[in-house]
Structures are given as C-alpha cells and as structure tokens.
Image (cartoon, rainbow, N blue to C red; front, side):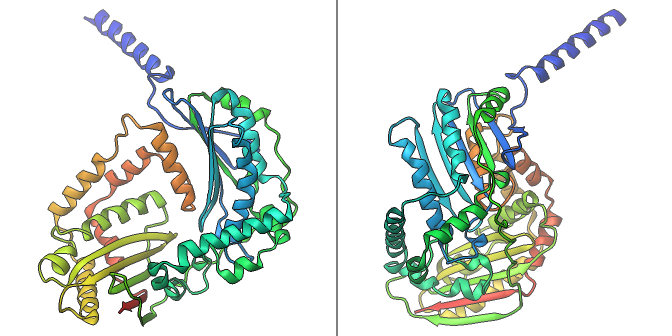
Amino acid sequence: MARLLVVMGVFLTLIAILFYTSPSLKPWSPIEIETEAFSQVILYPDEEAKDVQLALVYPNGEMANPYDEGLAHYLEHLVALRFLENFKTETFRHGNAWTNSYATAYFGSSKKERLTPFLQKLAETAAPLETDPVFAAEERDIVMREYEQGNAHTKTAQLYVGLVVDLLEDAPLSRSVIGTPEAINSYDLNVAKRLHARSHRLADATLLVHGNLGKRELEKVLSAVSYSQPSTLKPLPTPKGLPVTTERLTAAKTVSEISTDLVWRKLVRVSGCENPVVCNAKITTLERVLDSAARGGIAGPLRYDAFYARNFRFDIFNPETGVIEIQFSAVADKGVSHKDLLAEFERVLQDKLTSTIPTSTYDRIRTRLLDDWDTDDPDPEEEFDMAIGWLGDGLQPVTGRERKSAFESLTKEELEKFSGELAAPGRVVIRFVY
C-alpha cells in the first residue's frame, strides 16, 4: 500500500510539472516583456491568430494638451497619416488611430514575417514630426469638416453645448477632443510639433501585441527596431482634477426635433475607488441594479408603476480616481411636467441609493455578470481589445480573470456602502429641454 502511494505521488508530481511547463497546458495569461524602449510591453499569445495586431498607446490625450483645444486630435491626424502611408503598398494589413481625452493610440496588423518593419513604422510615430505645411493646412480643413459634420448639424450636440463646461468648469476633461471652429482655424504646425515632442514619448507608451508568437520571438523583434531619442522639452504636466462641489446649476434650453425633456448629471466624491478594477465592479453592478425594473431599481417607480418617464437612460462613470459621475436623461410621460419628472427622479434615486439592496436582485445580477466571464478559457483577442479600452480610459490594462475576481469578491454590504456615498451632495447640472 505504501509503495502504491509513493508511485501515485510521483505520478501526480510529474503531471503537475508537465502542466505548468508545457505552453499548451498552462493556464493562458498575457506576458509582460521588459524593455527600455517602452513603458511596458504586453504580449497576448494566440495560436489561432492569422496576423499580428499591435497597438501603441500614448498616455496623453486632449486633457494633457496645453495648447489650442483639439490640437491633440489634429496632431494624431498628422502623425497617423504618415504612419498609414505604409499601408498603401499593402505591405501591412491594416492601420488606424484615435485620440480621446485620456490617450492617443496608433494600431494595425501585419503578417508575422513583416512584424519587424511594421513595429519600426509604429515606433516612428514618436520620431520628430516632419510634415509639409501645405499638407498640414489641408488636414486642418479636414478636421474642420469633421467638426461640422459631427457638431454643427446635430441636434444632440446643440443640446449639450455648455452642459459639460457647467459640470466640469475649466477642468481639462471639459476640453473638446474635436476642438472648436476658432481653435481649429488657429492650429499652427510649429505648435503641433511642440505638442508632439512632449506627448509622443515611447518611454511613456504601452505596446500591446496579439498574435501567434512567443516571448522570445517578440523580444527578437523589439531588439531589431531602431528607436528615436526622446525630446529635451519638458513632458506634459499632470492635468488638474475635477471640480466636485455641492453647487446646483439648472437651466432651460430650447432644442427642436429632439426627444429628450430632461438631462441630469452629478459629480460626487467617493472612497474605496482607488483600485480601478474594484471600482469598475462596483459601478457595473450598481448600475445594473439601478437601471432595472427589479426591486431596488428606478425603472419601476419612474416608468412602469407611476408613469413619470416614457423612457430614460441611466449611466454611472468613473472619470477620475475617487470621483463618480451619474448621468440621467428622460422623456416625460404624457401630462408630466419637466419639474415633476425631475423631482420624482431625484426622490426615487435618493431612496434607492440609501436603501438596502434586495438580496434577490443582487444575486441575480451578480450571477449574470459572473457568467459573462469565461476565465477558464479566455479569448486572447478579447483580452487584447479590453487592454486597449482600459488604456483609453487612462487606466492600466487588466485581464478578464482580474475583473471576474473583483466581481466575485464584491459583497452586497460593500456595494450598499458605495451606493450610499453616491447619495451625498455633489455638483449637479440640470437641463430642461423644450
């Protein structure tokens, strides 16, 4: 019997060693690669991938831009078009770029055998900006057309003119990514070059790689690429924070042909949201609870029981560490005034935020959220895309396994404490739409 137990022990040990040393048997996870060129490099290995996808994300968007409003987006146009010229020859597969408030990203895909020249071109987005002035002026006109297409003729854009500024005041987050006509007309190529030198530093950027290749293969590619030296100009300063006061700003706005009667936004400070993964779990779960017709939600009292709102939209965001923004917009039901809709919404929301969350509602929503995460067999491409999204929100990349763990660890009591904090006085901006 003793001999049998020894044999079984040896057998199980061998199985464990095989499991944790065989690439095909180990639990999948992204691989971090140390390099002096980038702030971080993360590989998402995928044996089923046909091409290699790369994303280079600089942690500077419009919030960090100290120059004309929207210049970060204009700069991205100039840099991206130089980078995307390489795709006209079909040497590479796909390329694109974007800018938001928090970050600027350049990305694309390539065949594995062309990965080194592809990464070389991607890294050159940090090289000194050399652009023909005539081309720069043409691109400025294109940005103006983008503004006109997205803002000048959009009723929704007219509605929100001034609302964001009222809520965020002069905080950098209130800056328009697309810019304003006055700012766009003032764009100067030399200023764009200064912004580029201060915002496009590879040592600050994160490189994400998804494809059928291993750590050593990627390290070989990284070592074969030439990297430009960073500018001697001062890096961009850290943007100042949001104005979280207890001020209440109410205004009426006449906008025809739009089906919204009330827009309501609130900024409030909270504790326990220093960890973005934990904070995301709290926000997602509470939003699902409140934005529902289940017990503990606001849909029943506002729409299905008392008929105050014909329809509404409810969202919770985390625009800055320790700050939560709640957004609500609604169409009043027949015979309900704007002020009555506002009063009932605020009464219902305050009641739900400060009440005990029904266990049945919490358990049902928690189960649905956990079912969304297949952490036993994660999809590498989905993990890659999720990492881009988190970097685009100014956050560090996380895995689905980390997010699911945060949902699993979140207790109903912790969620209720978080909910109660949202009920505290904050900065509120209201628009009555007629």
